[in-house]
Structures are given as structure tokens and as C-alpha cells.
Image 1: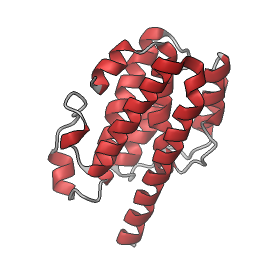
Image 2: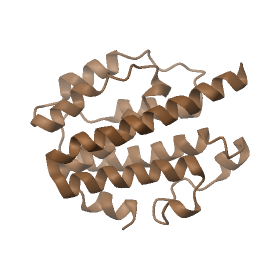
Image 3: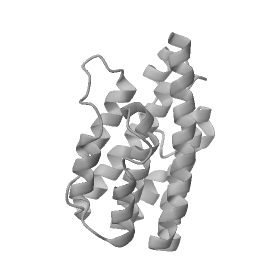
Length: 185
């Protein structure tokens, strides 16, 4: 099943976890610490409102810098667009946008692609699967699929494993961002 189909079939909690996981994997671009989104994960687990935790997460990062690169701006937009109320329509729209933005971020940062290929490549690619994608993008696409499958199969009990998948992806992106900064250095 394609990523688009999984998103279309996901329930509200699965969509919220999917969007949050995409955002969480991109935390290295926001300059936030690895724990800044943990309260949002907890609210998904216990069903509590997440508006207060979302406000804290937004306050934990520096305002968007006008000279930030496209990847950092996309990550910031994911956080800014997170709905304060987890209504079905708002979460579905946000989760879908986060999926696209996260794949775009990974495409922009993929060391296997030069800047021209990253800028000119397909915006989405979620219908076709990971086979034709570059390595970093393919790995991100697989992580998105795994998170959605875990929540579909295990409900709330899948959140811990989804978080583990997300932490792994965040480490990978942190390493890519670090290598990229050293290369510019």
C-alpha cells in the first residue's frame, strides 16, 4: 500500500502520530533539543489535549531566521502549521502536509543528490514507493510507512515503537545536517 493510501486510511491518532513523527525527525533543523516534542507524544498516548505542549514546543525554538535555508524553513512551517485542536480535518491536512514537507527536506539534504537534482526533482513521490527515490528519501518514506502501519495495527500500543522509529530517523538527519555544516565550514 502506498504512503498516500496509508494516510487516507489512517484514523485521527495515526494521522497525528504520522505528522508528529515527520516533524520530530526534522527537529535538528529547528535547533531544538530531542525532548522538545516529547510532551506531544505523551498527549497522543493518554488522549489529553496537546495545545499547551504545542505552545511550549513552539516557544522552545528560535523564531525563523530570514536567511534560513529551505529545509529549515519547511521544518519550521511544519511546527507552525500544527493544529492546536486535533480535529479530524485539521489533523489529516497537517499530517499530509508534514509527509510531503519531510520528504522534500530529506530530498534537499540527501548527499547523493546535487543541489540541482534536489531542486528539480519530483515534489512528492509518495505514490510510487521508495524504490525510485534517493537513499535518504527512501529511508524517510519507509519510516513514514512504518509509523502509519504501527498505529493502524497496534493503536496506542504502537506509539512507543513509532517513537523509536522516529528517534532513529532524527539521528540520521542530525548526522546529515552535521556533515553538511562541516562541508560548508
